[in-house]
Length: 152
Image (cartoon, rainbow, N blue to C red; front, side, top):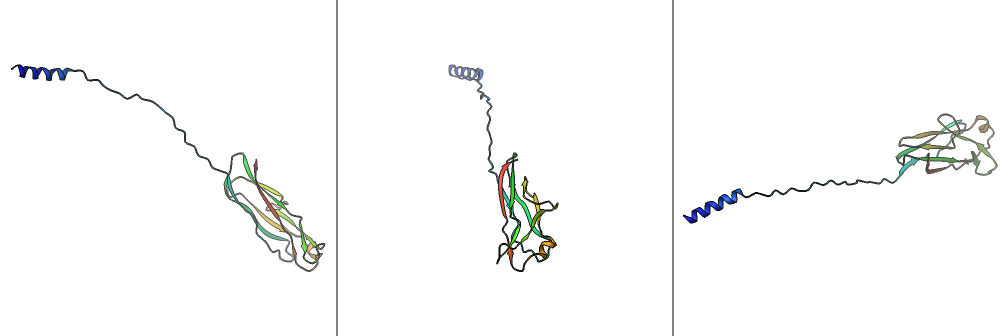
């Protein structure tokens, strides 16, 4: 009986013991998520063009921004350099003056662009009088386009 009483007492004692509760401490933290995109852009400039004899206006194509990821305070600048004279291949003193104009009819020297799809249509203009004064022969000139990334 002693053994039975000891066993019952042990079971009761175990049942009445307090149980310690363990709780995890709650903490907060922060994590930064970052990325960096280098500026990049693709600009298409006009290709070589053949001006037909007596044509007073010839399409020169377009300057167009094909892709653009630039900083908010920057722009893409395109400058055109030309002496505006087609030179005769036999005698460089014989020239045909020309002008490169935008779609508004203004002489084009430079423009700034911000986003993909920005474009400027260009054309070459030679007056009828300049055609009439020209000597026979082959004429050419080189137009230089300078593309730069600048502050707005």
